[in-house]
Image (cartoon, rainbow, N blue to C red; front, side):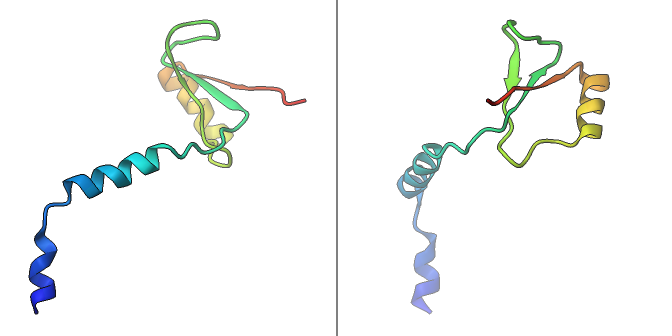
Length: 78
């Protein structure tokens, strides 16, 4: 019964350490790049690099182009 009561300790410093550790992990990026909201290659806008294996399908990429003026580019890998 006392174990349940002691679970209310503040976890501020522990949470920071866990989040800091997770932020150091950088997953591998895919070959796709998305220039968002009217940005184009060479511009200074927002560029999104999806994680490898989590690239949106063709329909989603098309709808992003139509609705949000996003340009998806697949980079050639030698």
